[in-house]
Length: 246
Image (cartoon, rainbow, N blue to C red):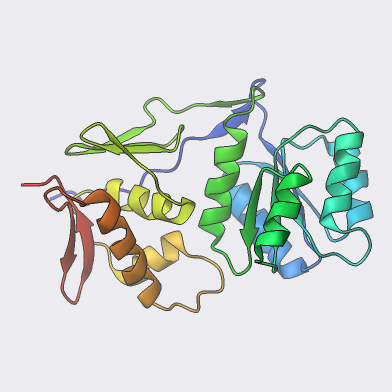
């Protein structure tokens, strides 16, 4: 029997065929390097900055398509950087990245013109998923996906629109839930271990805790298998798989 292969996500490019340009701004050099590595794996052209003034200088020359912007920085904070970018005419998607997680901080970032907000710690997969979701709506970005839809039984996942439905009924998922479901659906009827799922879906600061997989599998089951025959199954002592409902 042939082992199913994990398919790469649909590649996003600019309309002229050149790579998507991303600017990552964070005063934690190691974190910026991790994000740069993850986005370069997507085939994007990535620049990094460790401060607000440096970010503005790079943005004016580089003209990024999307920005990952830390809120707390030693010179200019992320809100001021965003304000100046907008003043420069850079009307591009911005994902705020910060250790703060209060409602007031989220509101402040989004009110300032940010498009999304992720708090530390986070998974690299979640950040990439959110960035893809932001820039796919840009008129400057196209995808080379032949068929962006994944199907398992009556479950449908669209990798471009980030929409999920079962038997035609829409299902709302968080970015992490979406990535977990996408990984399962790219490998139908294949048992995936907790360690495989951790490596694929969680890449940052979860310390390899397998309990996070169990938690998110339970979240998916409540949404995917609610009031319907189950599709997500546990193979005790091995892992999880998804298959059409019997």
